[in-house]
Image (cartoon, rainbow, N blue to C red):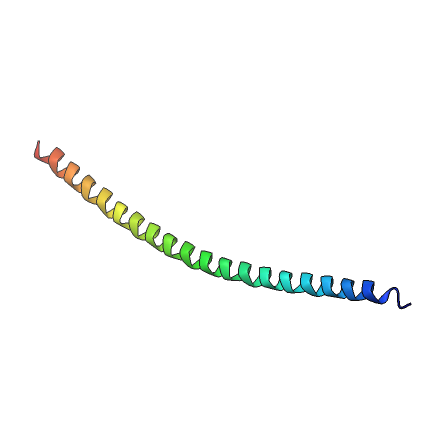
Length: 72
C-alpha cells in the first residue's frame, strides 16, 4: 500500500492544479466577456446615434430636393 502513496499524492496534486487552472481561466473569461459586453454596448450606442444623424440628413436632403424641384 505504501507503494501507491506517492502515486495518490501526485494524482491529488495534478487534480488540484487542474482545478486551480480551470478557476483561473473561468475568471479570466468572465472578465473578458464583461469587458467585451461593455465595448459592444458602446459601439451599438454610437451606431444608433449615427443612424439617427443619417436619418436627419436624409430628411434634410429630401426637403432641399423638394424645394429645388418646386423652385424650377
